[in-house]
Image 1 (cartoon, helix red, strand yellow):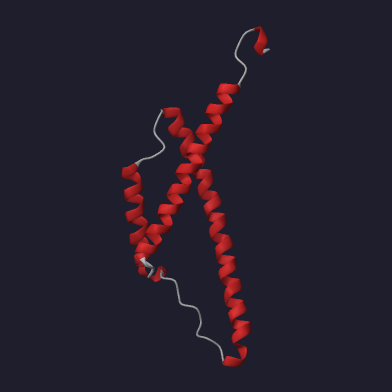
Image 2: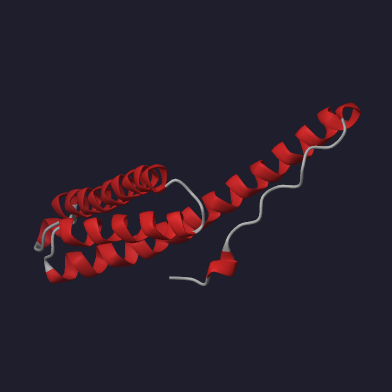
Length: 127
């Protein structure tokens, strides 16, 4: 676990009423930027998932690893709780991330299977 001082600090208190629209807009812009950063992290995660899929394929391993998934969900929920987030919500979020990862891996296997089936066979007609 990371040290307790890693806790995320709350946003600054609301500004005076006359400045509410501007501060709301600024806070929403900050959330939008964080969402984009989160999507970039998910894209990096997808690259790692692709590498995992290639290893699983090479070793003949199944896409799904229930033990690994259960441990991952437990770890992420615990880490979220240590940062003051709702562990159940983060667990649900990572259930979605895992489902997307499995779908990505299965999609790669389907593409490769289709490519192998449609690839020309040896012999004169394959040249």
